[in-house]
Image (cartoon, rainbow, N blue to C red; front, top):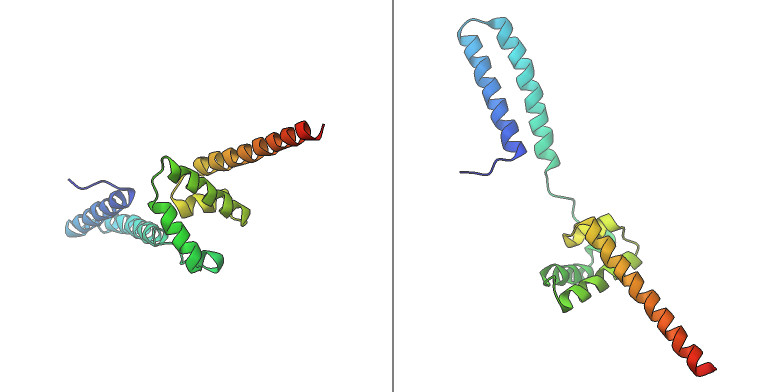
Length: 144
């Protein structure tokens, strides 16, 4: 059995309406066929918009199209999400954010949810502030 998707349901509904219209025409119900024809045309327009909106995203441009960024992105996507891979991924997310990319764009590029990106950025900010506090405490101890 194939997986049912919204696009499949829309196409199947369009086919049923077209069959009902053909049946109405065969039985001589011109008025009913015209009404079903309008519905079929509307569904056809919706189906065409739906399939065009599911088209692949535009090719990256600017910094995103550069080969070094693409190789970094490929390495990040191939890395496991545990252990050292997660730390590396956090560094990549921090670098992308520092480069001016938004959370949503980072999430799309890395195949993560926006919340995961937020958590990684918050963890990176927390680590930086902890390191700054620790180094200030160490300097304070030795300067006294």
